Figure 1 (cartoon, rainbow, N blue to C red):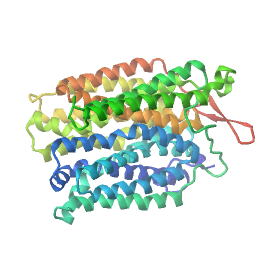
Figure 2: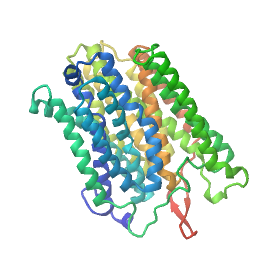
Figure 3: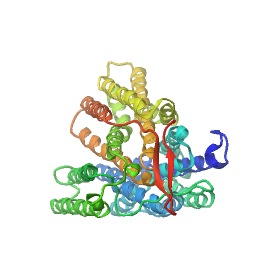
Figure 4: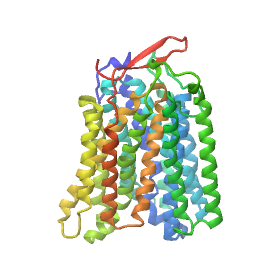
Amino acid sequence: MSSAEKFNLFSFTGKMKILHLSWMAFFITFMVWFNFAPLLQAVKSSLGLTTQEIKTLLLLNVSIAIPARVVIGMLTDKYGPRLVYSALLIICSIPCFMFALADNFVQAAIARFALGLIGAGFVIGIRMVSEWFPHNELGTAEGIYGGWGNFGSAAAAFTLPTVAILFGGDDGWRYAMGITGVMSLIFGFIYYNNVTDTPKGSTYYRPKTLGAMEVTSVGDLFFLLLMKIPMYAALALLTWKLSPAGVSLLSETSATLIYVGLTLFYFYDASHVWKVNKHIFKEPVPELHRYSFKQVAVLNVLYFATFGSELAVVSMLPLFFSETFELTPVVAGMVASAYAFMNLMSRPGGGWISDRFGRKPTLLILTAGLAAGYFMMAQVDSSWPIWLAVVAAMACSFFVQSGEGAVFAAVPLIKRRMTGQIAGMTGAYGNVGAVVYLTVLSLVDYSTFFYVIAGTAVLGFVTLLFMEEPSGQIAEINEDGSVELIDVAKA
């Protein structure tokens, strides 16, 4: 079986081929998802947009990723990562081309909103990688997948402005964005033709139903319903930000309709959860097939603090450096990119440490470092030498991204056939964190913003104390009814 092969980063066969193709797919999704930020000024002047309209496009870009990650996670578990990843890359090239051809704000807004769907690509690869790597290499493999793929956003920032200049003229940005769409379209076909969902001879375990996440106890059912509320609350917060109370881009009536829609959708979602899980009220799930939803909830909170803060800080760091140290926008952007650069090593590092020293101890240390890092960032002001501020940002970034790697080293060890759904919910919580932190940033000064993130990291540390270290085996049922036990830790 493929998982018995040596872990050789320079190999392009077996499980390593799957890992490399999957991080490349993720890299392209992030390049497409973040192709707007580096070309923002060109788009603004070309389409004659206001600053408020540009901010709205940035918000629309991340908003749909919250429900999309949950839905894509479910589809991945049901139909397999090969089909779902390929389809996502091909389908999302369409709104990418639409944005490149947009002539006004409305067209740009519709395309950008639809493009947020590509931000859900991440969760697909989490399931794919978990199928190909044994538990003792899983953290490292997921870390490489996440860290190298995540670098797509930094690659977009470095290359797309240059590409736009090479094409020249007012439409240079359109060509640059169009190229990312072409990459997405072509790679969708490459991925489909070169991967399989599992190694030869392995079973791909699917959830019993597609509608909602399964839980295995009555208490966990209510816990799941409670943990869904912040995802809807984040979308309500976005609506508030766009309403007359915020930037006045939605009318009072539109905002009210969205609030009512979100409330109704939550109850619809809850009814699905009830339908899928009502049998647990009649007969308890056998001990062998149980999993603890508490594990999922803890990882959700930690990803809220890690990836949520990364998305928010990447958005505001260039401005923070330029205002604090009076730098030009170009220099500030380069200095701030040090934060994103850490992804190449930190996220795989977090996964690797997790494989070696255990999931829970690694997360405890990294979460404590995260709180300390943001507390230190809150102290940065113009009296600091700039090199020291950059070192502080990079140190903070190390804990943030290693923490993300360690979270997703634990996700696939909870329940194999639901890995996509669990990754989807945890990933969505990262976007919820970004919405919350960016909203906080619009209301307070920089140092308070960093204190708030540090505070949520402390909260994450406390919830971590309730997490159990994954141990022993998880049971999955084969199609013939036999039970297979999958190792999740050293025996």
